[in-house]
Length: 216
Image (cartoon, rainbow, N blue to C red; front, side, top):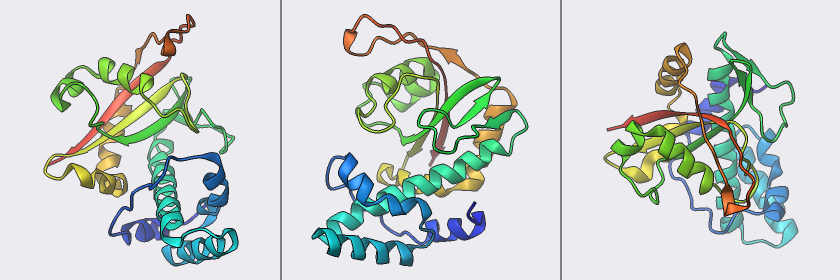
């Protein structure tokens, strides 16, 4: 396991979040899988240049893709440590499990961290007050790539009131996130959903919960 203090220092060095530049897909994911075991920004860019040269890719485009994956992965991993530190949470033994990160109240959960979606048809206040509705919308509008699933999922929703585009920075505000996660875990509010994505006739009934971190 990486040194939390060291990796958090590296995450804080990122001053600008580049756009994906393209839809996330298996091929570029495979080419950038070095992000999982790359700890520093300097080493990350060294690997980006190496792979881009070898695969004849445009370095800036591939670099933006890899940097986003690196940042999202390592912030997700550090936020998971906040859950693991709580006595009511049991980590999933298989760190590579695609749909389970931990167990809460004996139920398996996947952790999903994202900004408050601009496409959500209601206001932030409505989503805050009607978390069941927001969670249902998030399941039905999740990406069809990678971690798509209809199993139990716990959402952390980030929103920066004065500068929504800076919501990505809230993923590394671990002190504030620790307070929100700890507050939730003291008395978890979990609720069941009834999902029929694509109107296939197959109904899924996951358990879910929503944690908000909103910064003014």
